[in-house]
Length: 494
Image 1 (tube, one colour):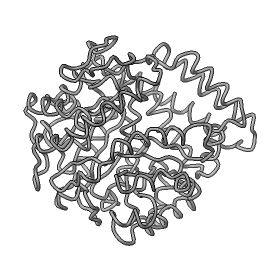
Image 2 (cartoon, one colour):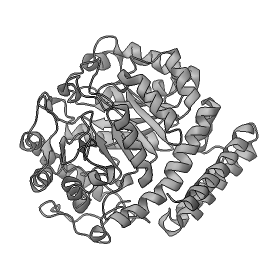
Image 3 (cartoon, helix red, strand yellow):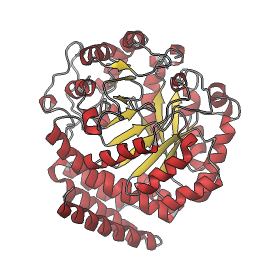
Image 4 (cartoon, helix red, strand yellow):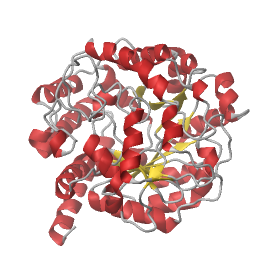
């Protein structure tokens, strides 16, 4: 960033900060809230121009903000009211201004400049160490010996910001095994938003006080339904630890959601509206739902949901987001919400993963790599052979209910790993791409006709901005050998 750009950046952030201060100082003024929300929509329209949301969509958002009874306006107001003011301000500044406004525009420009994927967020593992041993978890096969140094993590964030990335997620292992370094990183980079996938066991009052002081960390707590369904996979006593962490976060006004891995055994429990209402009442405001992936040599393929269960999952998540449901909770399904993001987001298209050994992996579930943070820059990782295979191939299927090159299109991952010469990254228990994909072949074949039927029953809109390689835009084509047999409604992702 040159001097002029730096001055402009600081001025914009300061102006945004003053707007937030005014908003938070006048929360009892309903008209002020509405006025601020509408200003933000106006700024988004002005900032993104023709590459932003369509005019009719923006008008619908404006109409919603003017309606005090709108479900999602009430939801936003609830989050603002229950969040510590400093946490609220830092989240709006870092996730709102830096990541959504300025970051998105910078990222889009760099995608064109460098001819490769540039992500909106980077996920990394501070450590492979974990104090739990969950049934079927691939992370446990890595052993406890790998750690990213503070300097490694600082390099990831510093170089990521240069490309426009202002959202960083941490997983593991258990990230809070490295609690001191995590807090140190958040303090040094107080202009970015950090979000931690966490098992809840290391969260206490002192830690919460530090999180509030910093203001730029949110959480996703792992939980899987009832005490019985949760502890049967995650271990005795874990459910109680989650309840304690939820109570602490609610007490201190810390923003948090949930991370839920749905399996054949727990899917009914974790999608039950009573469970969703329960965690919402505890203070969770959003949730990421992850389809169980048969990754690793200790995977349990029998935990994969049936195709009938997955079809029901599609329906249930959409119900929970509809106006028919009044629960103050926003669910997102990593596997079934592909249409919202134009299919697979891995390989740096919207995110990628750096493991605790420093290897750059296209996805947290795809343990193959050509590069490492100890020897390569973030940009070099994004331009590596495997990541460029992703860039050239996305979307992997124009039915975005079949987005993944592993789970739903396993022949594609086989091809990409072979062409790129990528190596396995699990030194403790390396899994070949053939072994991994062979566990997905039957599932992919069974899910395809079900997914196609659901997809063909819906209407699909072209997005204003297409986040694909240039040659993949404005075309009906998909990669060889994975075009679907029946004609699907044309759609392109964002």
